[in-house]
Length: 563
Image 1: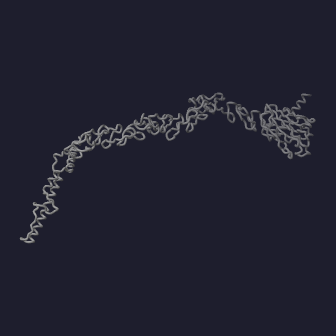
Image 2 (image 1 turned 90 degrees about the vertical axis):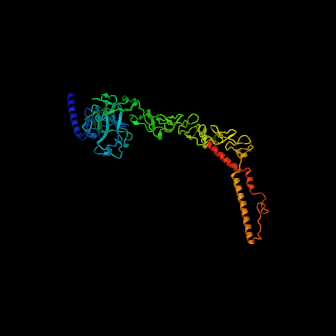
Image 3 (image 1 turned 180 degrees about the horizontal axis):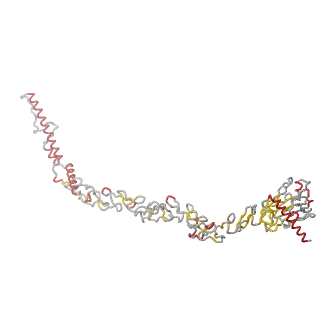
């Protein structure tokens, strides 16, 4: 009898399962609830309305009188219904039917279901996949399809919200439950298989995560850093990425490709000087250089150019005052200018040092030189340190700029190499080569030879060079004598003509006798001295004109002797 019952029962379940398949035609996914196989349980049972009725495959029997609905008992603060499948499935959604009494409206039939929750078991805990938010003034549509996406073996309905008419009591009155989905490694309406490389197969999307070394929509590709048929091998040294198709940066520190991460290509030990970034493909930003780009350029590159990002060198050279590859070295004391390429002037005083920027001689110039960089000789007429000394007595005011030596000779009256010494007593003129005249006192003026006092006896002139004892009538004295004689003759002729004229007018007998000029004065105003004695007297007097003439002749002879 037991065997017959069992066989009848199995046949009944098969029929019901076929009916269930017919009713689920609107769903592309499989109904995972199998009458007689799927287990149902509830928190409490009212009468004989146990949970197994929810998985009997009879969704059309919705009245309590038809005996195909579950019902929890009263005086409960919470009520639950659990459906347990035969194994873990990829569940997409849950469809269920609630109690429906023909004589009542949909709102009254579903009034105890408002604000229920649905959970699924993820293998560790219950996860809520749905909570009803239907207002109590509205009925919950039946049958109701609830999304509950997850990999699970059990679904649970829970309510803790009593209907106001039931005071504090809560109830569940579910008549039929259908769970739709696929096997764990399947997805889609046709329940297609995910790849065996897939780690997690979503019932809707398909493969959402792959096993460790695989990627791709169907895990058909190797994870970056792996290669081989089953992606079991790491990339060979120097390569990385998808299918190990990309080469490591050559700018990884020490230029060793082995330091590149095989998965993402990052340089594990940093970058070579001049490069930055995780993959060392970026050059240092302007103004920085070196390992890690942490060094700052010197700021002394010519025209404010940025330095070379690898080593900090200034490719265009340095500003004035700086030298070296990186323009970090100040010019030494003996160099200056751009790249310290110019040497300080050898004329800088005292140690040939100068300003490293513009070459200015810091301590001034050595003897004979002037100017900012001491490259100019002292102006004509000056010499010595800072050109402060003057060439006072040099010929044409010219002397050696360093020593002050009068290289062209001295002005009249001066000797010595710097023409600072007057002629010794007794000499005068150019190079003191002329002897003084017959001065009464010792010596004469060193420039023109004039005697400071009187001349010795018998000598005359400012230079006392005229011999007074041998002095003859000078041309001036002779000229005066001639002029005087001519005047006397003219006077005689005038007197003679007047007498002659009177005599002719008066007649021979009464002629007036004219006075004899040789016998006495013509009148009271005429001196008695003989007119011919005047030149003789002038010739015997010392004349300044004679002396001047002799001095001019002496000076001409001196110039001929000393050209």
